[in-house]
Length: 340
Ligand code: SAH
Image (tube, rainbow, N blue to C red; front, side):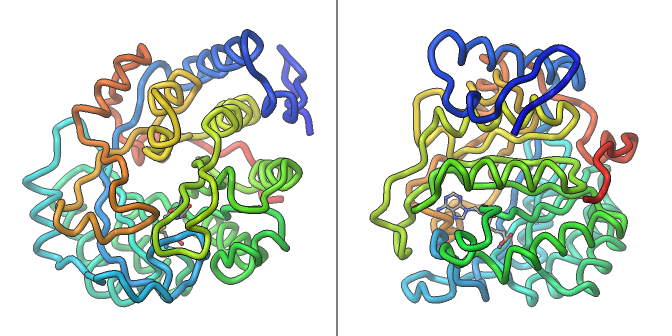
């Protein structure tokens, strides 16, 4: 697979392997491409983790339904609304509502929450709630959510089954296409360093994601999760993760790419380096501390990105917070990728 543009033609495999001076040059080039399309402006969203109930059983995720050692919670509408309305840092322009795959919290809490946030603020709304029914997608969209995050994690069918990601890869991809044709801006993504993942899997995944109708895409290193079947495996590698991010920026200069806190777990300065290398979205965690420890994506001591850390990283990377919300930006921008 090649990245072809007016300025360069680069083999994605070479980008994934890059190190030393060649790597620095590629990372700088990706940063400049971000600047050319977005300026040095980084979107800042706040995330709330509304529920850790989950009907899926992903081998990499601590919220999997077979994890019986987890205290399950659903936050109430009042708690979440209070957090968003009265306890959000001023730098936040968008809210991302995330949860395990839990249709009950979607119906009872998330949909009314989205409506209230829209009624009372000008915040943009992203949701990351898993694969739901078409009716739930419609209701969320009508409530006012704009951006749906649905990661494929691995774009190789056999590997997707092996990690027990939700449903099948084909259905996850169908859901992404469905969302994109029903008024949503969509983001997807992959995890780097999952057990038994090969470089060909990564390349195939990037290729697949590259042809989907996405406004954004993400890459996170795998973090071996407590209380999961993959708990004894190694974490993903920071260099490979950042190199993937660079390949993604070069492939689609106009897509949103987040810096993710897991990058800061697997290596020094991972978060800041991601922003330098072309990421343009950062996330501040708003979940109350007493609930946070049970929102177990991987480890109880995960790195919590508060406002201070996020702003410091943005500054260290030579960038500034965006005052335009992600939702507003996306509403004004046409997608260039056609449905494959
Ligand atoms: N249930 C929803 C979203 C919540 S999980 C869904 O399935 O879409 C949010 C994301 O956390 C997942 O998409 C996955 O990419 C990430 N995640 C879970 N466990 C992880 C791990 N061990 N390492 C890295 N990322 C992980």
